[in-house]
Amino acid sequence: MPQQAPTPSTRQTELLEAAYQYALDHGLTDLSLRPLAQAIGSSPRVLLFLFKSKDGLVRALLARARAEELAFLDRARQPDRPAGLVPAVEGVWAWLAAKEHRPLLRLWAEAYARSLVQPDGVWAGFARATVEDWLGVLAGCQPQAERDSEDGAARRTLALAVLRGALLDLLATDDEKRITAAVAHQLALLRD
Image (cartoon, rainbow, N blue to C red; front, side, top):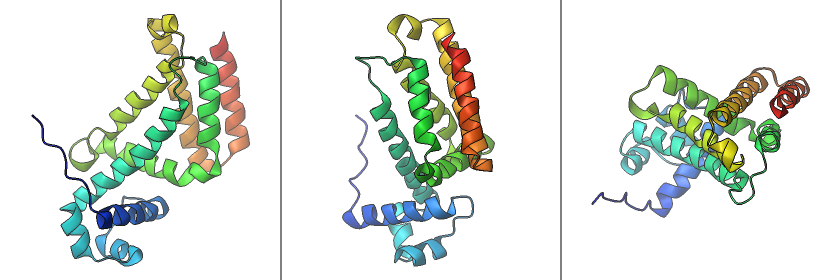
């Protein structure tokens, strides 16, 4: 029987939330314990005690970011009433394009890229898990017959590729109007 992870202490939860807010503002690539600890009112020693290592803290931060992403995805799912792929992608894009989500999405892009170039260790599996999560949500928005077909799988893969490419372009340029028009254009093609 697998052991459950111990329940985090109140202090660990508080520090994780503060560290998460710090990571949203500063990213994870150059994360250093001393400036992080100072910014969140702790010490490197306390962070190492609570998270076991810097990698343990980064894993916890990645899990926290993924939890926020999964919470959004859960709200997007409606397995009893599939909305259809195009309306689902329109809704997802509206969420992705919202300015208030940019810090989370920059963190996601950073973790996604790091997972691709460092497939072992703390970043292991992040990109793959993200793809599987999003494809699962998009599948849940398709009618059952489409969901189970090869064409349905190809259509949701294309939709995810459009969303991911548009998101990276948005993060690079902040040109929401142009990119939203491009997404709408691609969605018109997906309707056919």
